[in-house]
Structures are given as C-alpha cells and as structure tokens.
Length: 254
Image (cartoon, rainbow, N blue to C red; front, top):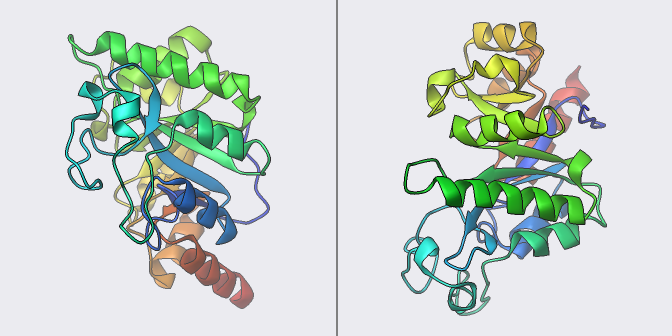
C-alpha cells in the first residue's frame, strides 16, 4: 500500500490548522482541509474510561480552561473543558468524531499514538492502539491512515500483530524513537526528518524504501525548495494555506 497525492509535496495539517485555530479541534481539522491540507495529523490519548480522544498533551493545563490529567479524567468530565475561548468555545474531539467526518472527504489521517510504553502503562498503550485500529476499520479508513509514534513499542506492536497492513510513521535519526527492539528500517513506511538540512538523511531513507517527510520547522521557501530537491514527499505544517501558497510559488518557477 502507498499513499498517493496530486502534488509533488503533500501537506499535512499539524493538529489541524493550528496556526489559525485552536489545535486538535474539529474547527482546526475542517479549516486545514479548506486551506489546502491533504492530510490531518493529530494525537490520540485515552481518557480514564478508555475513550480515544484527540489532545497532544497529557494534561489540559496548556490548552483548556480547567486543569486535569487526561488519563485520570472521564470522557464526560473532559467534555466540560473549553479548549477554545469564551467567544468561540471548543470541545476535545473523540477519534470517532474525526473519523466520521473524514470518511466523506479525500483526506488521509496521521494518527499519533500518545500512550507510550512503561511497565505501568503497557496495557493502556495496547488498548489505545487496538481501539484506534478498531475505529479506523469501523469507518473503512484502513487504507487512508498512517500510525505514528515517538515510541517504537507502539510501532513494533502494530508491525508484529498486523504486519504491513497499516502504514507506520517514525522519526529520523532513529535515536528520536524510544523502546526500539527492531531496526525501524524493517517496518517504516515514512519517517519525519528532524535535521531537515542534511541530504544524507534523505538519501539513507530513500535507499531503504522509506519516504522522507519533514516537519513544521520548515517554513521558508528556500528550505522548502531544498527539501523538495532532497526528495521529501510530505510536510507537516501548522499553517497549511501558507505552505500551499509557497509550494505553488515554487512549482510556478520550475
């Protein structure tokens, strides 16, 4: 399986369009699509009662009007927290709500599993992976997702159980990944390059059949041109419209 896009470099909205809207909200996701994103990147965690919700941090301290630890809070309690503002309140979405909306679009999804391995958290990490996959399959989106994590335990769990049925996204250099027991070359579909300016990183990944992707730190036209020349296939960005316009400018000059 391989993702295909119309453009030379695809655009993923990082937590939606989080530059212009509140991150990881349905508004941010919908506006990312409107502003040119091919993909939505988001973060999956479990509530106390094991509902997969979309929030980056393990607490609501930064994004909400009330402070809580997500893993210690029930879904209904979490839904009472405003992650927008008083003029435009927003709720923390569930993964299912995002999937329900996505099925009627052409978007792909990059689902970052935020439940990491530890001896105490192994069961929750596995539960988060399985619930995510079950919901993806419920909506028929197995061919339109990438499963992503900084924890190689998550990626290896999917690989060992499901083989290459699902596309797996890691990070390069591989020291960015924790809990490795298998060489990521064996199972990765793509990897986000942290040191975007080093052509040898792109060359290595391409030699292994792994797509090089770049992250939100690449914003200038000159950097985008370099990444394109090196072989980057996708950029994750906080501001999809800005990157779309810059890529159109680059392509217009070619």
